[in-house]
Image 1 (cartoon, rainbow, N blue to C red):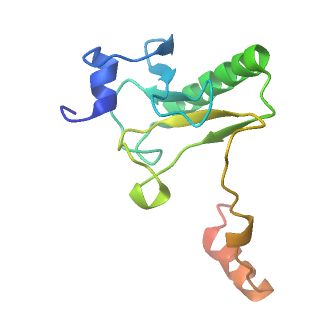
Image 2: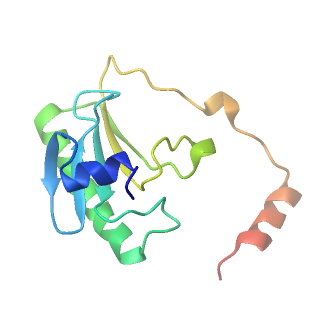
Length: 136
């Protein structure tokens, strides 16, 4: 897409701090990182979100996310690593090109907890959800 900032990065039209690239994906440092080493992994081809991604490409991206996470862990020794992938603006997706965040978490990293935002459903509601969502 001509107006997609990630597509421009893939084409080399915009500077990025690339740490990995192969024929299918690219990974680079986030320019507005949560922490040192915050990396984005995305397909070179434009897909809006996970719902558009071919399964084999998503599996490949997951392998690269694991590889980079291990490397970040070995180099920087964070207290944890937050991996997230947002789908749609309401879910926090700011750039509509599928991507996965790898965010090392250190003692000074501010993270938001959703623990106080969690809901509680009755057994009947949970049973209904299972019936509606069961894939088997």
